[in-house]
Image (cartoon, rainbow over all chains, first blue to last red; front, side):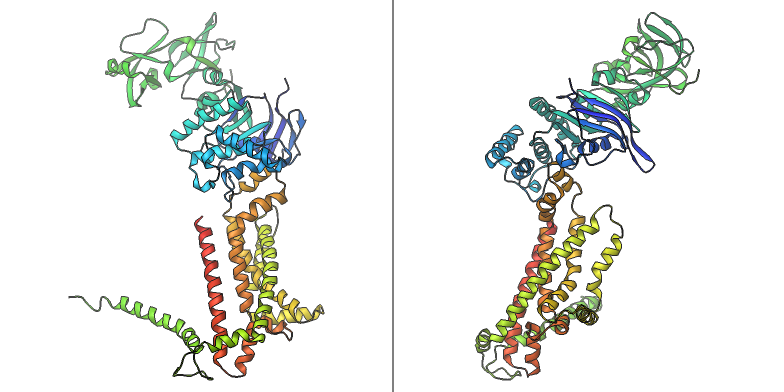
Length: 361
Length: 264
C-alpha cells in the first residue's frame, strides 16, 4: 500500500546546526504515529516541514505520493494542532471550526452540518457560541483538535498538544485522542518528548535523537527490545548492565557483569566471547526475595533505599562491587523484605542485550 | 495623642493634590461658567444666567462650517494614518526585513519633532512639490503627525499576538492576504479603534500645522483663534465648552476601549 507520508532523505539545518539529518520515514495511512525524542532532536522541525512551515535544505517530502516539498501550507492537505492551540480569540468555537471549511468553499449548510457533527464528537454542542477565552484548557484542546480535523486532512499533525494540561487531564486526553483517531480512521502524527504519552497512544513510535531516527517500532517492541542505549534510557526506567560475553549456549549468552556471571537472551545478536554488551533489565522484571531463588539469574544484595510509590515500592539494591539495581516491589511482597540483606533475581528471557557501540574489541 | 508632625508629609501631599486639581480645573470651570452669563463681556460677577449663547453658536453658520471642515479633515487624515501606521507596524514585526529599528525610529520621528518645525518643513515641502495650501496639504500634515501614534499602538498589540495564529490560519487554507484580513486585523481591532480616536482628536486639536498649511477656509481652532482676536465674548466660551465636552467624551471612550482590549 502507498504510504500517506514519506520523508525522502530530508535534511534541514539552521546555519551550522543540523536539525534533521537524512531523514527517511514512511507512514502508513490510518496509523497513530508518534515522533518521540528530547527537545532539539528534530521532531518538531520534521512536523513543521510536513506542515509546510519549514523548507528542507535537501530531500523530498511526499504526501499521498505527491511531492509537496515546495507547496505552501495553505495548499497542503494536512492540518496542525498547535502546542498552545492557536485558537482565533475573536471567533466563537463554531467559527473557529468553520474557518477551514469556509476556505475550502463549502456552502453554509454543509459547514453547519460538519461543525455540529464534530462538536458532537467531543460533546461540546452547548459551547458552539462561546469564545475560546471562555473555555477550560481541556475544552480548548478539543476545539483545536476539531478545527484541524474539520477540513478532512490526509494527515493530522499534533505538536505536543497535551503539554499545557495538568497530569490528570493529560491522561484523560490521551485516551480521548486515541479513541478519536480510531473513530475517524485518520492518520495522526504526534510529536512529544513524553515517553508515557507515546507508549499510551501510538501504533508506531519513531524515537529521534540529534536529528536522526534512533529506532522505530510498536510500543511493545521499543519497550521490550530497545535497539540502543539511548532508546533503553529514554523509554521507561531501566537498569543497564555493561557486561562482557563469556560464552554462548543455544540462544542464551553467559556474561560477566562486575564479577557475577549472568545469563541473557541473545536478542538477534551473535555475540562472541570477549564482546561488550549491555543487558537491559527493567525494574519490574526483577524479583526481590528474602531467600535465594531456585532458578534464573540471582545476586545477593543490600537494600540502600526504599521509596514508597503507592501501588509499588521502589528499591535501590546494592549488589556486586557497589553497582546498584533498581527494582519494583509489589505491595504484598514488601513485608517480607524488611531486612537489609535480600536476593534479587530475574529470568534471562525477560532481558535483552544491546551492543556497546563505543567498545573497540 | 496624634503627632501632627508625623502626619505632615501626608497632609502636604493631599494639599498639593487639591492645589493641582484646582489649577487644572479652574480655568476650564471659569470658561464654562462664563458661557452661561447673560451679558456681552466676560467678567465677574455673573448676574443672570442664560443659554442664549449656545443657541447663537448653534445658528452660527461659520462655526458649523468650521466644525464640518475639521471633522472632514480628521476623518481623511485618520483613515490615511491608520492604513499607513498599520502597514508600517506589520513591516516592523515581519521576519526577514532589515533595518527594522531604523524604520521604527523614522516612523516615530514626527511625534517628537516640535510642531513648529514640523509645520515649517511641511510648508517648505509642499511648495517644493508645487502643492497648493489648503485641504490636501492639511490632511497630509495631520497624517504625518498621527502615523507614529498608530504605529506604536498597533505594534504593542502585534507583539502580544501569539505567533502561531497566522500559522494556524495558513494551515487551514488561508493565503497571506486572507490571513491578514480574517485573523491579524480583527486581533488588532481594539488597538486600531483606540488609535483612530486618538488620530481624530490630534487632528481636530491641531493648530500650528493647519495654520501653516491651510488656505482661506478655517478649521475649528483657526476660527476660534480669529474670534478671540476680535475680542472675548461668551459666545466663544460656549463654542469652546461644546468642543471640550465632545472631545472629552470621545477621549474617555477611547481610553475605555483600550482598557477593555488590555484585559482581554
